[in-house]
Structures are given as structure tokens and as C-alpha cells.
Length: 274
Ligand code: ATP
Ligand code: ATP
Ligand code: MG
Ligand code: MG
Ligand code: MG
Ligand code: MG
Image 1 (cartoon, rainbow, N blue to C red):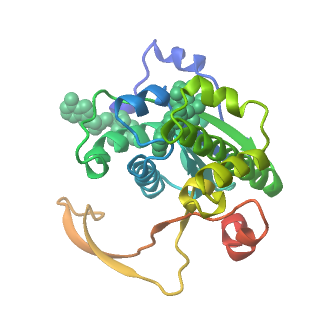
Image 2: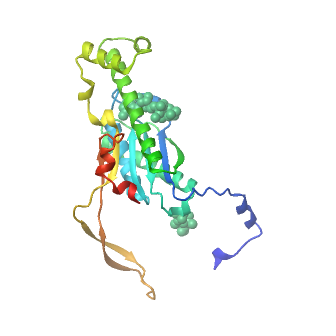
Image 3: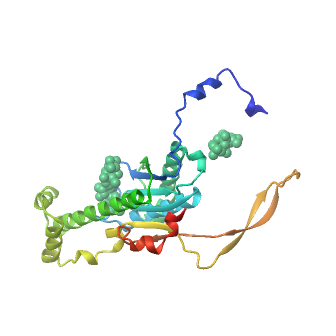
């Protein structure tokens, strides 16, 4: 057919680089909002944590998991999300650029598409962008350490931001003064400031802020079947037909739990199983 016909221009395809991901490795795509420091100010995000923004990020990540193939787990905090593809995935012949671009573009279009569901009184003022990167992890331990690293980052930033914004919003310090006050302080010092000056026990802050969001496929205690109708072109039949198809319906569920310790991995061994 037409697609098979080769032109004298065909050779330019050989200039494309091979970006096949190494076999048997976990493929992680991490995206991050572009200049969200500014974006969050212009869209009047509540500081330090705007629930609408966090929930919108998670809605977009759920869409990515449902629309794309073979994502085993995702983890998000602030303006970033990481997606972990199964180590045996054959999706797009494991081409790195396909994974990264499909994840980031699906996420970015979802962010705009679902914006109004979360920001009811706040107009989207300009189209946001996201960067993406891809990293391969050869062992389960490497992957667990990667996710632990992101969750530890969430904790460190959130503790800092919680004290910082208390000093600014409650004590009336300027951002520069608050920054100076916190320079060189350790985690214990920050907890102490929160407790003694603002009567806040950091451990009682919402889990979503302290732990970020883990997305996993719901455990199938029972199978939920869904009957959908699909237009299918059957072999040897010229016309497309409406056919009933039964498929197993699984859902992506958000958790705000610790993923650094062993407990999470013991409770959900299937995530690392294939
Ligand atoms: P870059 O383009 O390099 O990523 P950036 O401004 O996005 O620049 P980040 O390090 O990614 O820098 O930081 C994200 C910024 O977005 C932080 O300033 C953070 O306060 C803000 N932000 C993200 N999510 C929220 C949220 N849910 N509530 C309040 N602020 C948020
Ligand atoms: P893939 O995800 O592999 O890219 P695809 O369905 O997008 O799958 P393409 O080879 O990219 O496959 O082909 C794009 C398709 O979109 C074609 O079938 C083409 O007919 C249709 N299409 C794109 N732009 C237009 C347009 N402006 N008008 C009509 N059809 C269009
Ligand atoms: Mg950054
Ligand atoms: Mg960012
Ligand atoms: Mg970020
Ligand atoms: Mg196409």
C-alpha cells in the first residue's frame, strides 16, 4: 500500500537516535510544573498548601495512569509527579521519548481540561507547562529508594514551608526576615518554633501535605465487571458493529501514606511483582 512506498527521502529516518530503554529496568518519568512559583502566585494558591492545586495534580495523574499503558504506581507532591512503568513493559517498544512525551502532554492537557472542576472561582490566566525527565532503575531497591527520596523531599520542603508561612502570615515577618530566621535551623528547631510560637504539632498537619500522594491500582478483592459497547470492525465484515464487551474495571486510588518504610511494600507486594 501507500505506507509501504519508499521515497528517496526515506534515508532521513536513519538520523533518528535509538532511545530504547534498557530491558528489565523500572522506567520512571518525573514531570514538574514550569515556574510554578510564579504560577501559584498569579493564581492565588493558598500558601503553603492549596488543596485545589494538589487535588487537580492528582486528577491529572489518575488520567495519565488510566489512559496510558503499564503504569504500576505514581507519586506526587507540590508541582511534581513521578510515574513508574512496569519493568517488563513493551509499550512503544520501550522508547524513552514516547513514554516521556505521552506522560507530559496527557498531564498538561488534563491540567487545563480539569482546571475548572477544582478552581471554581479562579480563572486560568495562561497555559501552564511541565518539564519531563526519564530515569531507569535496575533493582527494586533502587526504585524504592527513588520513591523514598521524593517523599523525604516532600517532608523537608513541607516542614520548612509550614514554618515559613506561619512566620509570614501570623507573625507578620517579611519573606526575607522569615528566611533569615530559619537559616541553619534543623528539623527539631522548626518543630519547636511551630509548637511554641503557633501551638501547632507538625504531626497533626494533614497527611496529604506531609506525605504527598501515592496512586496505586485498587486491590481487587472482587472483580468489578463493566459492560461497555464498542464499535468493532469484525474480520470479513465490511461495516463496523456495536458489540458488547465485558472488561474488568479497576480504579486508581490515592493514598497519603508512608512509602519509605517496609510496611507499604509488604501490604502491596503486587506493585513490585511484575
Ligand atoms: P521550575 O520551573 O524550575 O520547576 P518552579 O517555580 O516550578 O520552577 P519548584 O521547585 O518546582 O519551582 O517549586 C514549585 C513551586 O510551586 C513552589 O514555590 C511551591 O510553593 C508552588 N506550589 C506548587 N504546588 C503548590 C500548592 N499546592 N500550593 C501552594 N503552592 C504550590
Ligand atoms: P499514533 O498514536 O500512532 O500517532 P494516530 O491515529 O495519531 O496514531 P497518525 O499516523 O499520527 O496516527 O495519523 C493521524 C491521523 O489523524 C490520520 O488518520 C489522519 O487522517 C487524522 N488527521 C490528522 N489531522 C487531520 C485533519 N486535519 N483532518 C482530518 N484528519 C486528520
Ligand atoms: Mg524544579
Ligand atoms: Mg516546578
Ligand atoms: Mg517542583
Ligand atoms: Mg498520531
